[in-house]
Length: 114
Image (cartoon, rainbow, N blue to C red; front, side, top):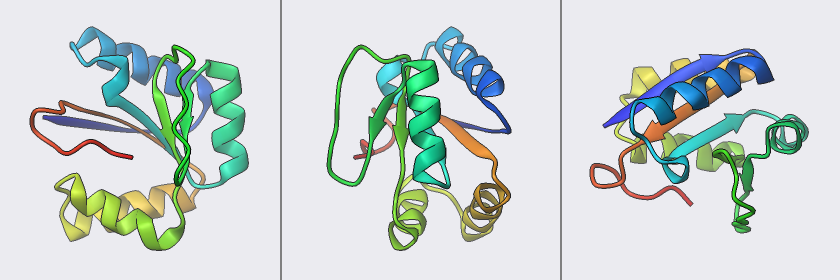
């Protein structure tokens, strides 16, 4: 199972994370994706979210995980989540508009994102 929310600021990110936790997702299965690395890092610091970049996982008991990818990798990561081409295009547009994606994935249904 996967749940995705498009949010516009850190307050909404925190709400989405809390909602996913209340739905039974573990913090290890909740991810944050912002378009710009600086914004990802800012949210990571403010919300105590784990920042997972291209190749550097960290664990400091975060509230959730964050991701940032190079443009080429973004589409393939979305497709690996089982999103359709239309969904991928919509979420890429949302990111380009400065929005943030918060998503939760049950790992028994989908591959782990790294």
